[in-house]
Length: 184
Image (tube, rainbow, N blue to C red; front, top):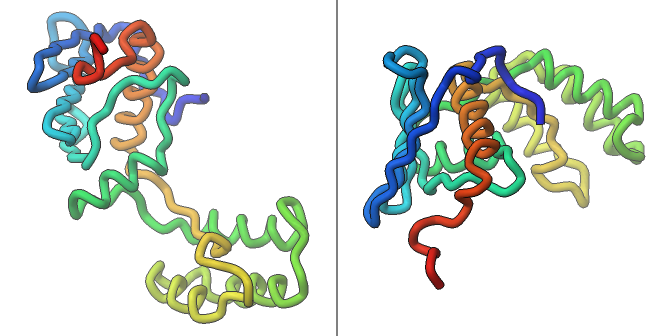
């Protein structure tokens, strides 16, 4: 997994506070609060606070054995629980995705699908909502919403949070079981 940002966590220390009620990962440089991130897991939620904003997710975070996190999964958990906006529509990258599909780099397309994608190129510079209404209303038969090219760019602070997630996973591979599942 490649890093999303150029933020260097080499000097950050990871402190873990683990009680039956709460699991906290404090990720900070020693003797300073600059660049710190606190991950607070309790009652089925993850609250993140620190120098990169405050975020509330509707799922607890526990380091994974794979050593990285899925941006799209965590954005979904962020949106379900709040009105925070993790990303913005990116018309330039959406246009590029459509052009790549038309060039045949991903999959074979029938004529209706090719025509649909060509029509989407004319809509890509609209706001996200208008683009998506057009895209949904004109989907080729047999295709669902996952066929619609829609590229978004993450909030830069959230990218730093995700890099910190990954770093905690790498460092915490020896602590993979949530406290509620230990001892059994």
